[in-house]
Image 1 (cartoon, rainbow, N blue to C red):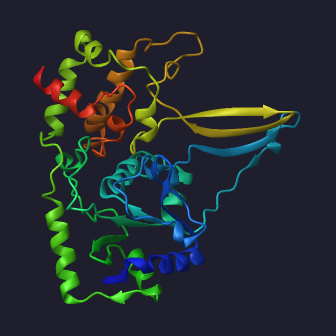
Image 2 (spheres, rainbow, N blue to C red; image 1 turned 135 degrees about the vertical axis):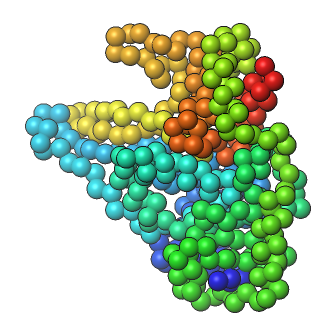
Length: 345
């Protein structure tokens, strides 16, 4: 199923989606674009390369309350915070970020223990994937193509969008997506020429060049295992790192979290908050012992988890080549270059 709408009428589609549920889409901010809840259909801005922060917080909020309680009352009287997510429309997600949802599903939805919070939000969300502009060169930090992700890859989306001149083409990918397309009355039927353009754009997207060194999962895994105890190598590549954690917070596939209790005037809440393996106290034990006191040990953990441990356990690299960790690192550490150096070591 293929539908289309004029780009200058996207606000009409947005208005109808807002009547059905929560709409999250790219919004232009002072420092760039990010996903935000849309309160005015005119807020949506599809004229962007990629958002600064990945949209993983739609399914894994940076802070999320689980239980509320009073410290003077028995534990049995604690109240579970109910999760009843609204129908959600995640609009304008780049293919590399869509791919990250599938990788994150492994941990929260398919590894034997299901996270009900993640699962419910995933089930309640319709994902509108959005192809990169093939006339615009990939940014220098990007390397999604080397991981087998096309610039116009519809896999993982419910609806996939391709811009064609002044029109936006919307292709149904899943039954959930196709059903929604039939409910949006302002959409027009795509013609044969539109379908041909849509299909050819997807094919061309696989040829869109990012950085070019092929990333073979098995080869990288073996090399990192070989280098694991090479302290000189890890010290060299981590020399500039300041353990700020920016790389993990902007990453679409970093999922570490902490469970903490906050109490004030007898009122308590247990919540989940994002954490990061790059933080100095991430592995601090109750005994006071910390097995990763050095920066190189923490950076080694991050790199090896994504490109070695995850491959051994689940058969896939836990990275989608979006380049955010490199773009926003304050000291210009480049994860792709680290893998290149490792393969040459």
